[in-house]
Length: 386
Image (cartoon, rainbow, N blue to C red; front, side, top):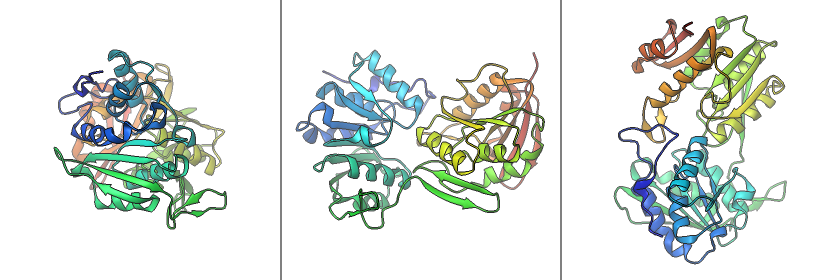
C-alpha cells in the first residue's frame, strides 16, 4: 500500500503553522527499520512514543495488521486512531498501556527518541526485560534534540548500539542484544549494573511531600521553582471551596499539597500524559491522600461538566512536543473558563515573559496579580458570570 506521511494530521492536538504531524526523523526510522521489519511478523513489531501515527501507520501499510503501539499522550493516541480511519488503516494497530504486555515477545521496536533521558532509560529497561532476546530497537529523532548521552543510556541495557548516517538533520540509533551484562534483582528480573528502577521517589521535607515520578514527567521527582512559588501563595485560593482541580498535574504535587492542607477538600488531578497520570496516582498514595484525590488521564478538563468547579490550579506547559507553542496554554485556559462555576477562580503560575494575563482575561475572566518575582507571575482569574 502506498502511504504518504504528509497526509497525517495532529488533531485533536494543537494544530497550526510549524506544527507538523510527521517529519524527516519518522521517515528515517521507517527506512532504517525496513530490513529488520521484513524479517518479523506484524504482531512482533511494537511502536513506542509515536507522535501522531507516522511510525505505526507507516509500518502497518507494509507489514499488515497486529502492530502494538504505546503513546504517552492521549491526544496522540486519538490522532493515531483518526489518521488510521481516514487512511483506511482502521484496526491495523492496537494501542496499549505501557508495560510488559505491549512488549512481550517483540522482535522489533520502533521508538521516537524522547528528549528526556529518564524516559529513554525507562523505555529501554522495559524493552530489555520484556521483549524477545533477539529484539532490535530502531530509535530516532532530530539531531538538535539528540545527545551522546542517549547512546550511553541505551548501552546500559543493550550490548550493541550502532549509529546511522545523518539524513535531513535526523539520525537513528540501533540497539541490539538486550541484557547481556544484566544481573538479577530481588524480584528475579534482570537489570544491568547501575540501571535505575522506575518509578522513582523523593522526599521533600520542607514541603512535607513525597513525589513519585516515571521517566519523562515534568520536573521528575523534583518540585520546579514555578510550582514552589505557586504553593507559597495557594493558601488564600478560594478557601471555602469543596472541590479543586489540578489541571496538567504532572507528578501531582499541587493536588497532593491541596489534599493534605485541606482535609475536607476533594481534588481531581488530570493530565493528558499517561506517565504523568500514573506518577500522580503514586504521589497521592505516597502522601496518604489517595482517598480524596482522583487522578485521570484526559485532554484538558473533558471529563468535567460545565460550571462545576470552584477552584482550578494550573502551571501550564509551553511545549507541544519539541516545539515552543502557546496553543496548549490557550486550550487549558479555555477549558478552565468552561468548567469554573460562577465566581470560581483559576489560580495560575507562568513565566512572566509569556504575558498571559490578557489571554486569561479574555478566556476566563477578570484577572488579578497575586505575586510576582524575577521569573514567575501568579494570577487568580475570576470566572466571568454571563
